[in-house]
Image (tube, rainbow, N blue to C red; front, side, top):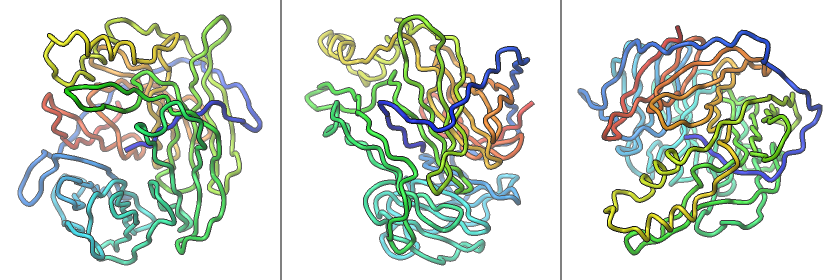
Length: 370
């Protein structure tokens, strides 16, 4: 799961322009090495909410449909279950984010608004309730970062404040890692008598991600600007204390927003409603935000080595390009992944991800970059 919100602007300190025009851009392929089927002896993975991998190669998977965490070996063998359904200590209602701090496993439960820490043997070590509502992340120094929630039904087109805040485990406020005004540009329409609200499919709000090792965050400003002039996006690396590590601007070539891609999104938002409902189709078409061109970045992920993975324009075909930057923001390479694959835990030249089958069932796969 990746939190994504939009900003009007982001004030960057020490902005520099980083070009990879002129560098030999290389495109790597992700080769599937092994997979964990969605169901096996002692487990089922029909809804994967989060994933993390250890230095030893073990992978931890949050299965939100059965409210537990599964620990698998590097070869895909089930080692143990961690936690169970419930509201008591060491239990889960909706496990959402998974991470590792040293040898301890931590899990954020959205429904219970708390972080649970477990020993390498899967025993509960500590429970940390959040200081206020939001999504919780355990930082490398033991503090807690809380990212905001978006209320599409409540906040569409209303100015608000995007704040990523850091607290001590006992709830004392430390600092804002990020504080910026933003506007929620959501989509809202009536389908089958019910109100449907959500994020715009082609929105260009700022994206952010927290480091899996807990040393800060990255913010991607990708606002689509019409008119002449070079088009750029900005990446800002922010330390846990709120200081800017670097801020760099990258040029890109705009890709046209095709009518075919818009039609694909409209059909998805119709949710299987019969084609005989032309009013619904026209309502959705009128409600969709259409920028001058496709947002050049559609998602951001962190690697365990500090690398930054940027999901590029979302085409109408079956593959999508990811651009990988080093921990210092330098271009490394591009990779091509099927659009149904989502990388979760990136370590070196390999990563654990999820490949969704045509029915939306997740298959956990380990890939190696080639």
